[in-house]
Image (cartoon, rainbow, N blue to C red; front, side, top):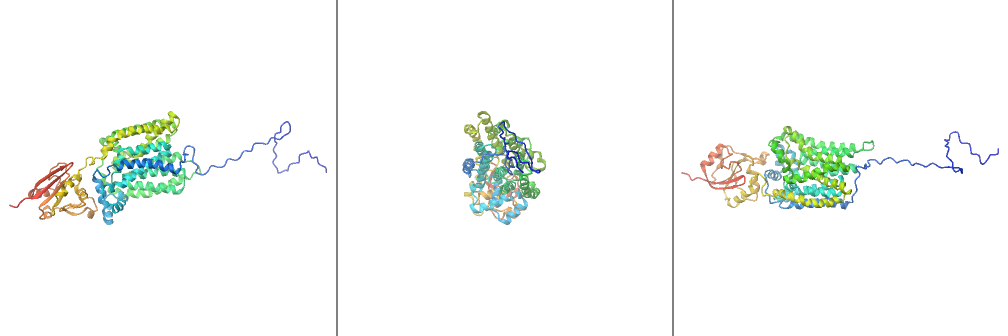
Amino acid sequence: MLTNENASPRPRSDAVTEVLPRTTAGTVIMPRVRRPVPPARENAPTVAERSVRYPSWQQALIFLLPASLTLAIGARGIADRQLWNDEYATWHAATLGWTELSRLLDHVDRVLGLYYVLMHGWVSLVGDDPSMLRLPSLVAMSCAAGCTALVGQRLFDWYAGLTAGVIFGLVPSVSRYAQEARPYALAVAAVTLGTALLLVSLERPRWPWWFAYSFSMVLACAFHLVAGLVLAAHAIIFWLRYQRSERDVRLWKYLGALALIAAVALPLIHSGSDQSGSIDWIKADGATVVELPRRLFGSYRSAAAVCALGLLGLLGLPFVRRRGTMVALLVWALFPPLFTFVTFPLLHLFLYRYFLFTLPAWALLAAGGLHAMTRLIFRRSWPQLLVAVAALPGLTLLTLPGQREAREPVVEWEPDFRSAARMMAPKVRPGDAIVYAGRARPPRLAMSYELRDGGLPADIFLTRSPAERGSFAGQECDVTLSCLGDHQRIWLVSSSASQQPWSEMSRDRAATLSKLFQIVQEERFPRVQVYLLVRKPKR
């Protein structure tokens, strides 16, 4: 059968036919092929959360510049200010044997156990000089400044990050607690590192980053439990960057990190709840609230300057689409003091030292204010570096009085035990004894430290040492006369507020000493008095 070549072949019955349009010349117009859109990459960041990837050297520079500035400021005069009551407690715990330290933690300060263990190892390596006791805090606060800059880089840009790190380093209370042998600086460092790791984990949601974030926050809670309140701000940061889809597994990783943090923090809270008597002295009255800005920032001027820049951030960040970031930083800065104030009747945690980890949030808000204003005015980010260079000298001048106050030789309202010990040391004779009086700031640990290199007379009224009792206070004999022995000279060191030689003593002790001894020398120092008692001649 012949076929016509120009005839179209009959299509198969199972084929799908499509009528294609033709031009007037008979040319078939082929349709445009639309390529299928590939599925979104799992855990890909959204446009709002996608940040600029800086090279490693630039991130190292962003970290090192504020860290170096904070290290330089904090290192100046680090050993000039004498230790105060809490630092004497750190020295005592760090120089105990492991058995005695375990006994101490069974009775008091169990929530600071990790810090005391670390300081025990540190002191055994480098000694107990004031600068060595405070060096871990100095290094930690310097790292906190660097981590603050890295957080600012991811929340805003590297200009704002550098500005935030520098502002943080200029706050007087930062250098004040960089020069203190207590765990607050380590808690601040752990919080800022944890915040930076959270942002990295959200950008690169791999398990090692989430484990690092969990470990940092566990350290923050172990150094100070109140630092765990920053998790409220972290929850907001996570929610802002979380993609609610089946492919975004970051929710489960975040919940896993929280479970790991809770597994360590909750037992620590429970174990420390029976030692809450050690913080019953904390107040939350009107005077304490009024003093909070000065105490937290180091001076009212510093507080006003940083908070004014922070207010600039609150006003400007919503206009540059940073409303969520503003809310997270505001929660970081304000939620801890507000929460502890409201729960004060139950928890007794409203103390300015406990809120030092909120200072990076204030520095970030201040840097965010400069970032927002330059973006609104210049439509670019780089002019904020020029604005910051112009503004930081003024901030430095405003913080100078607070920096000087932080380097006073004696902490405000604390006894000058160092001067008392320096006066006594060359005058102590073999066979001398020492006794103590004063309840608010008992002198025993302080004088033991200040005269640790020799010259400490025999503590004749001590029957059980603080190490034996598992405490920071010793146990003294009840009957004064039986403990006096035949000592002819006794040094009486008193931190009594009344400045009377026999005040804040038991009635028996005051009567016995005044009857058998006479005061031949009296030296007064700020909040501490030293009396030399010589036995009266027998009649």
